[in-house]
Image (cartoon, rainbow, N blue to C red):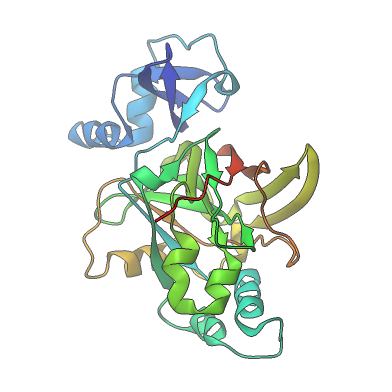
Length: 297
């Protein structure tokens, strides 16, 4: 069972459930967290609560593809994990050493370290949803999307569901100096989430999500990569445990779990590119790339 938000009658935001058959049922709650809270009050699982709620209603006569989708959860905080896949470690090493692949860096150390890399990625105001533009920076010449599985958690670290995230990144800025990481990771519209949240109970094995990323330029496929969460170095529970350690988080926090798909080293995103990130059983997150007008300070 997937949960979406969409724009109804051009103005009203509607929460809805999407069944495995693709039927869309509007829900009365304002958002996922309210839905979870009501399920807890009735001492039933979120999946059972949704199934009961839609059991006596009719689906709308539209498919998900026909709807104006919104970000599936307005996450006040989005956090992210780094160097959780071997491929990501290799890419970070390439950036940090200028292509000297035989050099050992702190990325090797963190890949094997007890403590993972976790950083603050985005706020609700900087996060966009399906069909919205992601922005590239005006001061970077090496920018890429980072397709990731995102986990939606409550303040206790319990997994509520899974979504798709795009952690837009500047490889040249991060490679120049690791202290530039916040600038390489966070700016306006540098994070996208969607198109849906797959309820945790609907997932038999979270370490078997197929991830595909496609980048189009002038309708031509320029980059395509595939991965699977079975390639993760660290488990989701491990990442969550470090995120909430001595840290108070908010219900509905999203934690991006790292990427295993890195475009070729000679590729950078350009204005007008189209990004598609597909994760099995969740959907396809589509965003256009935009270089906004340079703001003079």
